[in-house]
Length: 182
Image (cartoon, rainbow, N blue to C red; front, side):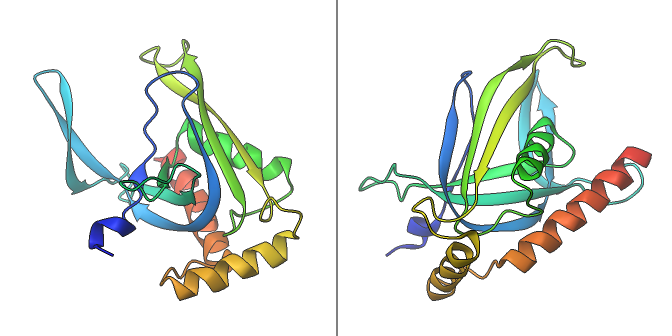
């Protein structure tokens, strides 16, 4: 197995209806990076982003295992949930809908690009629908599924736990409050 076999491609929707769904393998916090506009096009770079108040701009990264496995694709996708963003709001709505406070390994996570917000500043902000199903999707309890996924993650050197995911979500909520006051 090569180093590149373990990389999860990023979910990057371009057409309304583009979606990704899979079982959560792990989630972790990552500082957002910036970019520059060059000749009218956004060029990403690795410069860490900060809010005006000095707080780091953070993202929650959710790595899911999809059914799209081929010889050249391990089927894993990374969903970057920037805070604040419409995807972050949709994720919070999905968590509230199931009465959960975090995204656990073993949950089924689905995000779909549903359209553009004509009332946004540029008139083209993407809108998302997020659905989270607790557990493994095979009738097991959320606790048992999260425990099994955590055991599997430990074997494959993935170390995110539901407690870590809860802590990440708590920290992201604090950052959003800080960004709103900036």
